[in-house]
Length: 435
Image 1 (cartoon, rainbow, N blue to C red):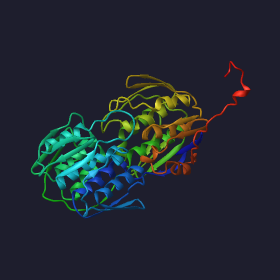
Image 2 (cartoon, one colour):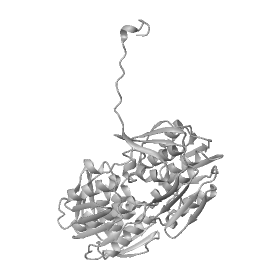
Image 3 (cartoon, rainbow, N blue to C red):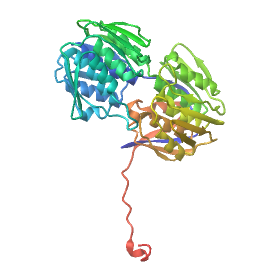
Image 4 (cartoon, rainbow, N blue to C red):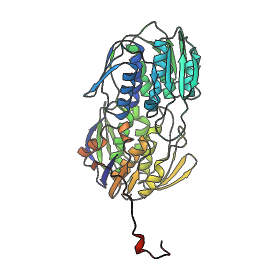
């Protein structure tokens, strides 16, 4: 198991490009199952989650080749319609294959998903959406078993604008008979990218980018080529890396509008921002101001930036409150930040952060993807050495993050973490009381 080692306290300066969005490419890969043929997808990050989805598609029967940030997917020989537990347990996005398999083949068997260890994220919305489209759903020993001779259009109102459920229903509805309306649909850029990919395949979709999607089912779709949008969460993480270290960092290959909520909060914190059509530059003040944040669905402040923002507020000149309304228990990084000297007090789903002048390096352990990014940011700002364990989490969403930060001046590297050694004690040297 690897760990990332950081010797912090150095301002970051320079330029770093952003790769394609993980949360956009995963549903797009699943959508390739909707039509038989060959697809070419560009700007694909080399991530653990992408490799997992590629392996899942291969199990289903697709041919998948990934090289030089490009994916070639050939789905003409798909036949094995099961997403096994061994894969799905490692990545929740595996459930994206449910809608496409059901729409194209009329049946699917998909394991209930796993993924990050924190928080319940039920798949009820996915299941109810498929049922609304006319599918028969059974739960069989941890598997979702779905059948439908032909899906039929329906009006589906989501209780919350779930990104995953919106994507799954959207894909299934493209081949359903008649019109489907998704009310309270997710508006995230990744859903917009998926919808645009489906339109290029021949889908009929109205309302793209809004919370009401109207899909008129077609008889068939065709393969297409596509370029994945930049990863807004990776971009936000690099911007905060410049801010937390007191540096000046330019992030390229980015869509500034996708980050508007984060950029507004950075300006409130006293960070100087300059932006162009596809780049953003941050210039940090001597010390950032405290700024409260409450996460919300897009276009609000993203929950996937909550942990990184907490790292920044840990060194702010004052106190702030960070509230997560999306995932109420997404705070496993708090205890690890406290090991670095952060002053944080929890009240329900709100973290009260009192900034300190300096964090101090220490061994810490990541518990999920965004917690890993949070701890790396904190380590970049901390004095001395920080060892971040369990970085397989970071590899799910950031391609070789240590190699991306080095050109900015970060003293950071990856090394293999040794197994803990047993400690033996010579009992003969102890008194009877000590024994």
